[in-house]
Length: 304
Ligand SMILES: C[S@@+](CC[C@H](N)C(=O)[O-])C[C@H]1O[C@@H](n2cnc3c(N)ncnc32)[C@H](O)[C@@H]1O
Image (cartoon, rainbow, N blue to C red; front, side, top):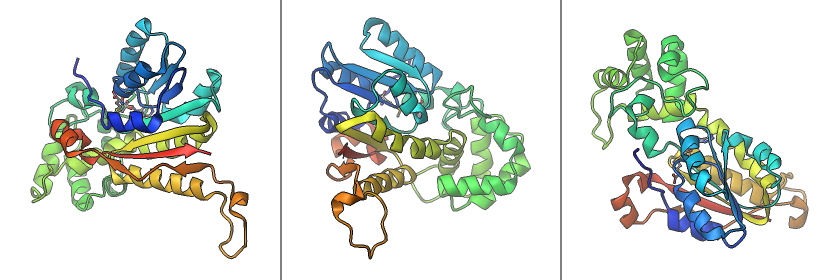
């Protein structure tokens, strides 16, 4: 089975400071690269709760948990983090919550999952194949205007109109290579370093998997899940995600919104988070060894 190399592993461990008896939630278990490093450090009394909505990731986690009962596996989207933590009796007691957003290497590398235009496979792109339409089904029925909106909002694709028109002319499109070829014909190869289909694939994936809604939904729930002094660590892979994480930490560090001209003591604003350091990026060495780390940004905050 293709494996996944965890990104910013040392930095995540430094941020979350796992120790004996610690309880951590890994919201994006994947193949457990980060979860494993946490388990190594929490001792016999510690626990790592691993969430994933991909059945293959959940199966890998369950196999692992057979030999390590300190790993607790939840087959759930991370927007259910509060509910899962409550069911496990750890609400308000968790030492650290980690999000390592986006797709894993096993997802990208498996042609049958349909995430990558580099490998020909059915045009699917669902992290949970049981949830919602596949990319092929959605493209078959969507209005051209809706396709334009998705490519613009989630891919920031400057050629959204031209690509959407080409998709509508060519559909039905059943395969990843089929979609990539429609885009290659519609827009000239860019002088940039990426393939012309890169932003379209990113946009459709983010839209279908409701990735930004999931993040917006889950971040505030972490405030209920963490204990005071517990830490939140989020690794984003593009600016649409990072912008949200940055804004969330900034707003929660500022506290309740009051009109600017009202004289209010800082303590009356009830700030809930304290940012820990600045955004952290992968070192050149890590990027050389793992190109996926190139766009990774880690932000860390502590619950007050
Ligand atoms: C980048 S990988 C994580 C890799 C992991 N940290 C490791 O080291 O193996 C992201 C994982 O998060 C899962 N995922 C993404 N969005 C999710 C969501 N909203 N809810 C639950 N799991 C999600 C994906 O299915 C994928 O397995």
